[in-house]
Image (cartoon, rainbow over all chains, first blue to last red; front, side, top):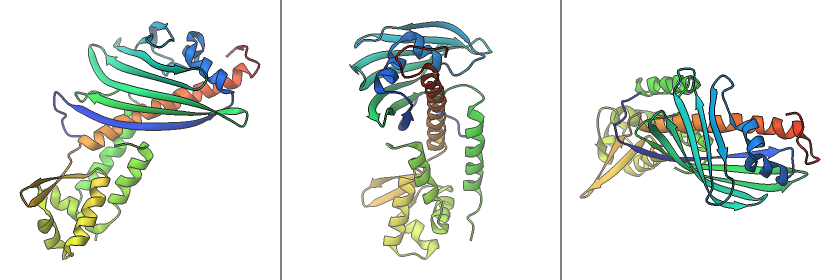
Length: 159
Length: 117
């Protein structure tokens, strides 16, 4: 991988569509109630929870802090911008790794009733800051793949 | 670049799927080049080269800049692949969360009360 400049902004976006086995009201509740949100939001069972707060209203915020095995703080801080009960949530969030702000995102989550369940679409527009990215060994899989691709790109073209 | 990471990867791999385009990447890895610079060793007509370059641009592998009448193409260094890697990792984190959300919803039932999830 090439070195990343000290100061940089890299924009991208992605979308995930998911069919869920519950009506929109229950899916919405899983996003809007602290207890339910905590049940599914945390990704690392072995990381220590260091603080959680949810003030779910337009203008309100959400805060989640975990410590990884090295004791580094991973902070998620969101600000709710638009809420339509059972239909839509729009929020901005930042991720901090220790003292560094690694990314800022705008997220739109939309819920559509679908055959007794819910079609949830999640769109994240993100700016990665200063070449920092989400920490963790899970990145390795992607990086190994990209290194292979980079090696292949560097190889002489096949005839 | 909008769209899912899957769509971006599709564009990337499509860009890489052609021998002429891979030769262009190889040439651009030596330094920036104009359309005619790139056409010469390939013995391809200019319109064909322009089309290949458009595919490479869509794949996120090259960008270009016009100075006077000459458009110069250059390989985007690892930066783009790195952004793709970050986005893919972020996307994977959310997919894992949504797996848990799905399990949580299944475990808590449809009667509105929360179970033992």
